[in-house]
Image (cartoon, rainbow, N blue to C red):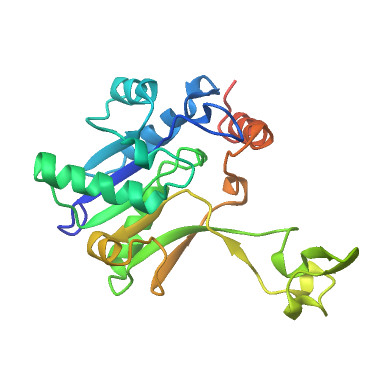
Length: 238
């Protein structure tokens, strides 16, 4: 709880994955991938409850072994490739209300594919939002480096062209404005706002800038190798 606001962390973890099969339970630096996210949620001083939602029984069992009390077996219609994160989160909120009569003021979305959180990241984001309550929520952003979208190209009729018309006169990343990508360290939003908009992205968000080494999400094997190497280097994991 923070400033009398009850906080629910929701960790969505499907069993299936095309880019990296079974990625949420694949071992990385001695633990299943999802364990890194669960542990960061559990040590938060503000998160009241942690919930894992999955269609995979083994993921739910791993979560229970790590101390997660609230486990949601996701229905089939929320386990397909076209099911949205917003639908999964709405289902989880409804589950807590109908099953346990628990209501929350803030929702923290924690994606297992972004395990490079520092211990204080979640709480610092909650504190910033709490100090700026006129915002709907807060999102973690990483500064884009060499792959600035304003110097990205497309191929059209066999020719290389600027992806965006505004970037036609930009040839160096130094000449383009800073760009940021919402890497999944955390997405936090007021529950009433989410239930109205069905989105973590409203027109009234604040931000939390993450470190350069946190600018990774595990979607395929190459991402996995990068994140594993960063963990070993940054956290001195043998």
